[in-house]
Image (cartoon, rainbow, N blue to C red; front, side):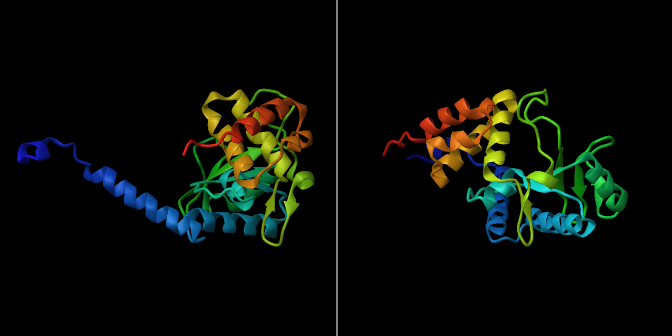
Length: 214
């Protein structure tokens, strides 16, 4: 290979290379349980518990709890409107700010982590009325010693309803595909879901049975 040929090869720019190593380091911290997003989750759960505000963790952190290991950069939490107002009244300006004026979501200023708030009674995906809605965490959440989550069927329902109705939320359908493959969820898991999402679950379950070419 001539010197001229070597020179003509495209080079990886320094900024892209830097992002690669930064991302790898953050993923390592996440899977060791030492990332900023995990510290923000622990802090949020601790405050909600201390204040007696019903909540449930959703999104990527909940998926990790159920066995689908993937890095996430924010905390998604389900609250009632009353719960959100109570939390704002006590903590806004004291470690938390609104994401932007009028937003229901917050930012943990100590750790620099977005807190994506969804409200009981609202609808996933496109936000339009549908047979699947975000439940009241006081009724729906399952609780452990340190955290409250939604049961797996309700989490899957919400992911499916979101991905089915919002083109920009296709990642939610991919999450269900990963859950089916990693956890070995059966085809009849569909029976535990709302009728609105059962056919989509069965479609995704069938897709998960296809073997990758070797």
